[in-house]
Length: 300
Figure 1 (tube, one colour):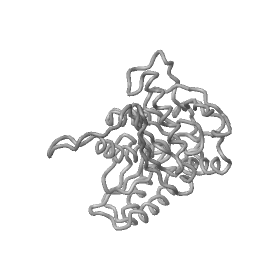
Figure 2 (figure 1 turned 90 degrees about the horizontal axis):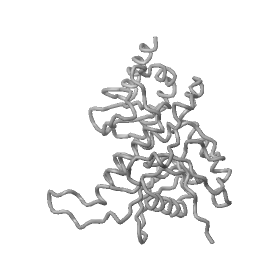
Figure 3 (figure 1 turned 30 degrees about the vertical axis):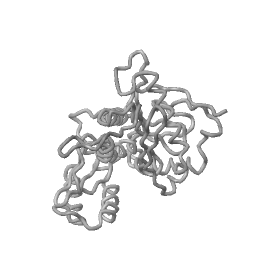
């Protein structure tokens, strides 16, 4: 019966949106260029593909969102069971690690605009205390927005009783067991911590949840950072131990580092956004277990 309903859903989407193909894609599958995409609460996504560019992608996305939410319980029940899916948090870590390595970055980090929490990092996960001083207290308005954004993507998951925390948790890793990675030493971890602090104090941060836009970069004496906002309240931060600026490439040569970084961000950010929104809902206070939080420096 579930397979029949899934088939009916696909036929309905093709008819209502004029799509040539409708499929359920895994979080690790590359996104089809030009497809209309809506994420499921288990991290997978619905892709509606078209034979030609669509004139009004935003309108089609809203229509697909309505159809997906109406059928989501069926689509979740139809998830394949033969292949064990990696926990969402692990997939997110792997995606950030791949992005950091592709960009030759010290770290790739996901934060939100209103709390001291590091939601994910390319480095191996461990829990570090965070100062809960007035500067890092999440405002009541931001708490409400955070709950609204995160819960809106997983309402069906709770309705189905799928609340197994083990499926999403990251097991803290002892510092002695870290594998070599983009930021596997204390000096580079310190750079990442400082970069996050710089980004948290950008004037655009308080306006993100009201539709603000963030696409900034900055150069300090010993590190360089690039920040991109997404999904209303989240920010992806890339940290470099030097500016990724290089001389212009000769014709046919490899593009300069800045161009590579921008291309890597455009490619990875949609997947990172889907994975972040598929994380389980967490109360912002206290710091969630399994999340990584860097201690912020006290200002004198």
